Amino acid sequence: MPSASPAAAPDTVLVVDFGAQYAQLIARRVREARVYSEIVPSTMPVAEMLAKNPKAIILSGGPSSVYAEEAPSLDRSLFESGVPIFGMCYGFQLMATTLGGTVDNTGAREYGRTQLTVSKNSSTLFEGTPVEQTVWMSHGDACSAAPEGFTVTASTDLVPVAAFENDEKRLYGVQHHPEVMHSTYGQQVLEHFLYRGAGIEPSWTTGNVIDEQVAAIRELVGTKRAICGLSGGVDSAVAAALVQKAIGSQLTCVYVDHGLMRKGETEQVEKDFVAATGVQLRVVDAEERFLKALAGVSDPEEKRKIIGREFIRVFEQAQAEIIAEAGSEGGEPVEFLVQGTLYPDVVESGGGTGTANIKSHHNVGGLPEDLEFKLIEPLRKLFKDEVRMVGQELGLPEEIVQRQPFPGPGLGIRIVGEVTKERLDLLREADAIAREELTAAGLDREIWQCPVVLLADVRSVGVQGDGRTYGHPIVLRPVSSEDAMTADWSRLPYDVLGRISTRITNEVDEVNRVVLDITSKPPGTIEWE
Ligand code: XMP
Image 1 (tube, protein in one colour):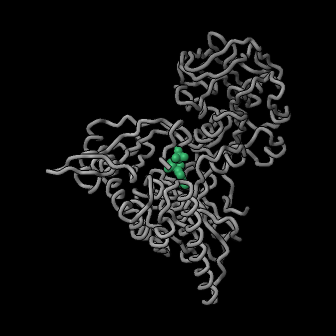
Image 2: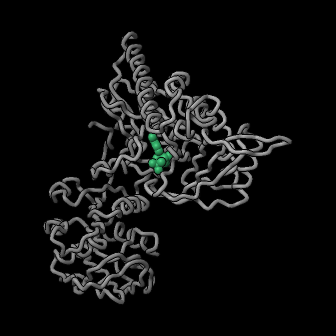
């Protein structure tokens, strides 16, 4: 799949993934140290790793014991390649056993915060850090003898060799997880490896990404044209802005207004995004079409399918028009499609383990499957927080850059029951109030997202003014999460909840009750439908 990639590769550190959840975190920490990093699977042949010309290699932790039959291994030649290597946890033990050290299958386990005693704090890894420090451990086997030529630089109560270093060969290892926040000096130890052990200059920034990508996209696209679907979310907005910076009016963006957006969001794309980027935007007003297709439908899966299907139809039609117009003007053909794919998507789809289909997700702004376009994916190498930084540097509005996740099918799956224009308007008002109050209370960064749901098929009795009411409840679903795979309900301050409730019941007709969802995920998903 063609994609824009950096014209000149930056100094790269490879993070070899031994199958735990740590590799992505390590890669992010390396980038926080302003060094570019990429994750590769431990099954990649050593020659292929070396062909990437890495300035250093980090071996991640992993769930196996080095003695397990199926335990992943590494060819010894990697350690003889001259590339500086840093092993962590499993990577450390693998380095030890491969190079002739001893790892005992003692059954002793260390898990969680552990006291590390540094025996040589003038060493490459530990310089300037205290003799006693807290680190995060998660292992069974323990190293009892370092390989020849290595100096032992730290230990714990249970583990005699908790770190070793070989400056001559530039090989280093620690039993703990420096990438985890609970390892107090972890980032410093990692940076010591990168700067002192491997001699890498910290020079990688998101500003470099913009320059590299702009150059690469220009070269890739030449005089041809590209289109991009905007969803109102961060990723497609930043991808579009980056491509716009590279090829200007050769890019056309398409925004399908399905009428299921929140209050003010369509205007933000139409006005603020266009003002900030100067992008050519085609807005397709498809509200009526979507409402018609959704009429009479209450089943969540059916709603999702209808919204996904209609979206693709509308997008394809807009795209056909753009292609036809380009052709009739005798212009260059539309050959490229811009997508806001992020690095975790790339890594995870490489991992390839299937998960049960709980809900069919439609990424509005996403790619109809049978399109014959070449892809431009300028964010393929970035993590979400880096994408936000790029967006900020490109001058995108704060409301777009800091936007919390919002589902492609929009408010369509936040109305339990049939979706109608009246209900959407009502939910938009309630949602806007909740968002306003959360922002005013400074809670936006603390919560992952807060779906506001209308229970359109439920009514309850209330009293408002002098009369009895028989209105609908609104559900608040504030959640905290790292990645949306699991979530906990956010403990919002009562006074904020109180203000939201009072304002919604006062200001939104037909709503006479506000309830709080206090379910974690699992068992409850974040969205109600
Ligand atoms: P659930 O409800 O499955 O949601 O716990 C997990 C995360 O995904 C978002 N979500 C979607 N995002 N298209 C999207 O782009 C969808 O169809 C969709 N459905 C749910 C949800 O908001 C949460 O962040």
